[in-house]
Length: 368
Image 1 (cartoon, one colour):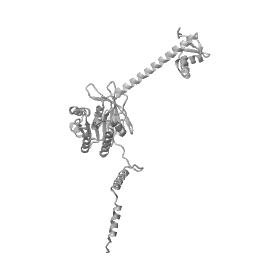
Image 2 (cartoon, rainbow, N blue to C red; image 1 turned 30 degrees about the vertical axis):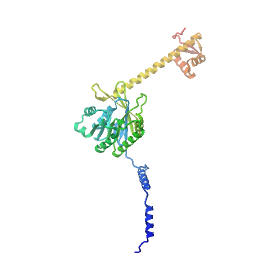
Image 3 (tube, rainbow, N blue to C red; image 1 turned 60 degrees about the vertical axis):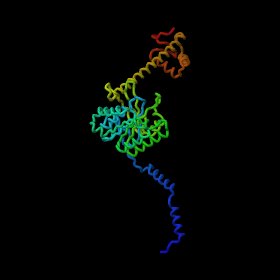
Image 4 (cartoon, one colour; image 1 turned 90 degrees about the horizontal axis):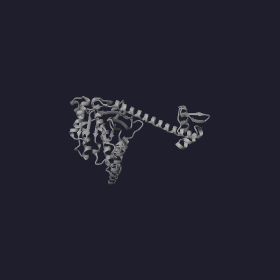
């Protein structure tokens, strides 16, 4: 076999080197491969969403996604979490039904001391009637108030990796950041939680207060803005004057969960309040209808008094067109509104019309 000349060997080495991709090209190729794997095409098969819970057949808190639970301070957000946890443990609580078979639940509380967090267990036992063994096997409740924001996320990731829950409740998401107005930290946190959801196929439900202003129902700061943008659904708690906690779903990518209602009874236990709330809403509708009718009657009375005054000024009779113009001018009404009013008063027997002349009915006294 003929030996290759040094020049040929050198050329071969150069050709091989040129053929080797640079580090930048390798990074680019890897990035492109990752993006290509995320492309959605007409043939892409996407699994149907699996919901953790449902109300009246409408699912909410889909697995593999982050969710929000918002409300003003002391409006029952923690109580709502207890109802959701109780439904997951026992199958159903009030109208809230579990869509999972004996799921594992991770419940993280960053706000209360351990003795108060322990009360959650006691209340769930009362609500579900589950055994201690079953609750300890399926519910992992942690009091992390002493933990700092700089470790809470890694702590949560570690717990999820070890426990492998289907549903995670974080009561106190604001404690995961130094400031809820830090846009960079807020985006990084929600991004990390989304990654955890996708990696482990769990639903992470995050509790966050609304802004303090009564008419501002947005969740607080940049953290609330990012969570509302990324969340698959956001539930809202509102407490009525009677103490009913009304739970609605103002923001959802898919079907909105029907509103449900709970309250605490005289013994401090959570009970269903749908019937009470429906009665309150019906009473409120009737009150508003009565107020509208009263306002309408008062308005008609004022217009009639003005009409009778004009008739009296004209010695008890004046042409309809003249009366119409006076009412338009004095009461700042449109011509059609005045026409409807006069016609209605004639129909009701308050006024009489004969040959387009308007007079007061015999049983109506003219002002002097």
